[in-house]
Amino acid sequence: MRDQTTLRLVLASASPARRKILQAAGIEPDVLVSGVDESLVVTERADELCLELARLKAQAVLTRLRPAGDERTLVIGCDSVLEFEGETYGKPADPADATRRWQRMRGRSGVLHSGHCLIDATAGRRAEAVASTVVHFADVSDQEIDTYVATGEPLAVAGAFTIDGLGGPFVERIEGDPSTVIGLSLPLLRRLLAELDLSITDLWTKVAPGGQSIEPLG
Image (cartoon, rainbow, N blue to C red; front, side, top):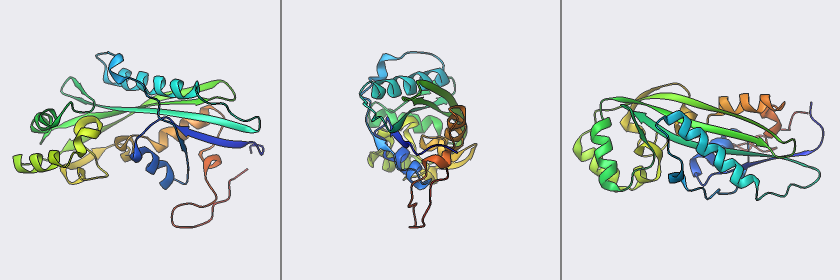
């Protein structure tokens, strides 16, 4: 049971999908975009890349925070990349790039890696890890690819696809945690919080989606 110190979670990401994941789980984060230049990190390993970017995002936001004395502030940085046939895919460079990717990916599978870095600004502690999920893509037609790319959605996301948006019908199945593919793994967040001696229920707000009341435990 924790004391009455206010617990604040800051999401170091501009991703609406990550914020929605947290909100759906009863957590209302503050959002502060890191501004990290993702092109500065170069590595051949997809899991190392996403974790380093998550770390940089969290640290960049951390330097801009001034927590109040009665507030315990946490910062969560996340980054996702798709590992496909030995290559690492972040966001496509342009529509032509997104089209080429989908022409390669259709009917095949890849691994979506999401790096997570959780920093307790108050205690000066950090927990971090990567969640990975296998994604099996549908054998979509050229017309479906062209129409999907024309929506603009693939240009804004790692791997050029979503499962919680227009791209959902083009993913046959996944092996692992769905929230990892969306960009923030809730089961992994729970484990990282535990490493910092916190429970995910400590972050629940009093009113959750649907209007039901949730009183914080502790």
